[in-house]
Amino acid sequence: MEAIIIQPKDQDDLKFFVELAKRLGAKFKTLDELQDEQLQSRMLQNAETNEIAKSDVIATLKSMANEDPSPYNED
Image 1: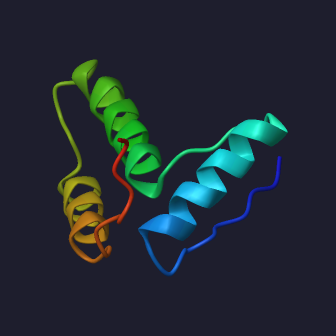
Image 2 (image 1 turned 135 degrees about the vertical axis):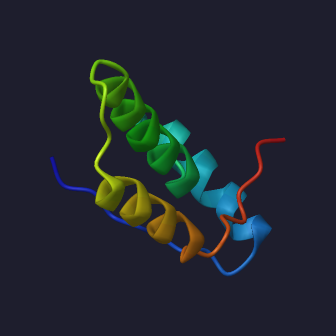
């Protein structure tokens, strides 16, 4: 499945796009939600092992630190 990323210019535009997606019946997630799910998935996978690759931890932390915070807050 393909996806698009829309970066709204302000909170009002974000609310507009969220409402539009809901009305169209489209699935949507914020970037923060997607990253949280990916991190949780990796943590659960690693919980089954005794070792975690240091490079995986560093890469995940770097990608999280380099992202701009999402302007979306559910009201």
